[in-house]
Image 1 (spheres, rainbow, N blue to C red):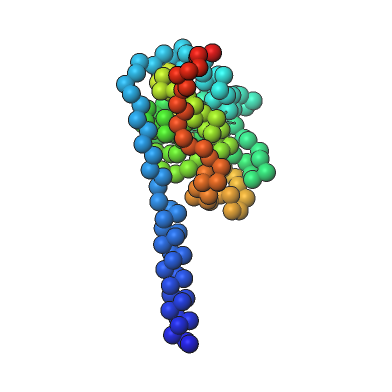
Image 2 (cartoon, rainbow, N blue to C red; image 1 turned 90 degrees about the horizontal axis):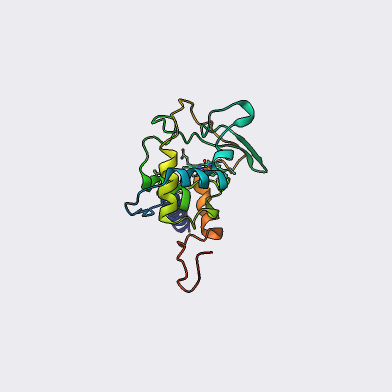
Length: 186
Ligand code: HEC
């Protein structure tokens, strides 16, 4: 009997440990963007209309455009929008357009970590490749600001980013938008 118990507890440890390892695996999402010429003016318009600038600028405290730091209070804790300027260290200056597309359309970081939906990427999945190219062109014009992104202040267990994979599995419709050729554009 003792042996059976020992075996069962060892088996449990192995299953839990490998489950945790799988859980920690980066999310592997291809984010190819065809080589398109981006229109920075249209991108700036999209960034205004989609709330990117409002949410990623701490305007109340005189923060630089897109340098982040705006506090977003939620029931889970306070999120701080990150720095999206071209600063290589503190912003997204060393990102590729694919990194950008993966983040904005799929909510996945360059390291394969899920983003919190406080960043409303579930609404941005329908951006076309041209929208992404235009936004990217606009973001390239943002001067670098050497201001580190502030860590979020979240209650337990919401601080565990990998837990978001459960939320993604339950709620996120991650299929890409495919236009219906029968319909007109407007
Ligand atoms: C309601 C506020 C809000 C809006 C609107 C918003 N974001 Fe964000 N964004 C956030 C927050 C909060 C995070 C941090 C998410 C996290 O840490 O998981 C974030 C993260 C990001 C990141 C990842 C940055 C990094 O350092 O990893 C990118 C890129 C980004 N947003 C781009 C955009 C773009 C482009 C738009 C507009 C199309 C936009 N965001 C609109 C709140 C917002």
